Image (cartoon, rainbow, N blue to C red; front, side, top):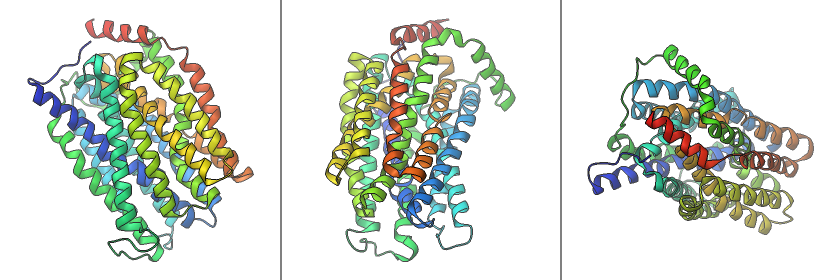
Length: 435
């Protein structure tokens, strides 16, 4: 199965890099809002203490995950019927950008600050993840089969680079290095920290434009756009799911191991600040090192993915992530935490990129968005388990025990992934495409 390419090599390259640039654009949201800057700020200022703040933030992650799990397959089927992935991607992007802007103006001192901030965050996070369904579904349509791994890796690598640059701008311009940022914003109620959301929103909007304007949809409508028809399509897919047994096994495995990764991303900055007393500036520098490692890991392992396969790439990354998480949980000093952070960064990128490329190889052409809706479902359906378990254990035993809980998800998910036959999965997708 070879993806359709543009009419000329230059047009094809423009399509590929426009697609990859969307990873650069959206990474600012996950890096600054979900993982490091805003997440840490919320847990330290919106609650009586950091442990309660961590519990509250975990609830926001859990609620987001439930909405994403429910909506992603349905909206994927809607897009497959309507043949308009790019339109849905644009809508979800704009909603996320608007929600991110709104977070800037929620002060911890105002009435109902917690519920207001978490509601806005949930809206933005759901829109972000739903957008990823449409975005990821373009991969098998624009990338040749033999280059899916490296192109997915380029996207993730570029995304981590984008997150790195955005973090540097946030550190220098807004938060400051031991003082006020260069922009001289007010520090009252942490406004200068909340204002990093404006940077995220502008970054996301600006750099998503090449994807939204230049990458063609390439899908034709298969029916009227309506929820009832989409649900009917989903039911039909479920009835035919026996044809795609490797997809099912892979998604179940990802259901578990991705919980561990989500939990690390959501609480990495919180853990660094709470257990090792890192300041906002320290957390940002910690995130910068992780992003450098992740970007290099994703780009380099993309070639390994194309040679050895997505399954073995993901398995290697899971083992390395588990070892790094264990080191972080028992780290006696900041030095060991930094070493663990580098390990997490280097192998988080390949884990995400290879998971996406493996799914792209398994996707039948006529169900691209729908199957990536299932991919999003597998990443979120039980995503409440990791944050919920971490939050519960943190409240009872402290953050170290909470962080160690991710090892369970890596062990179980990795074991299930070993049952997947990548060759059979690719053959099933090719057979369904020809049929």
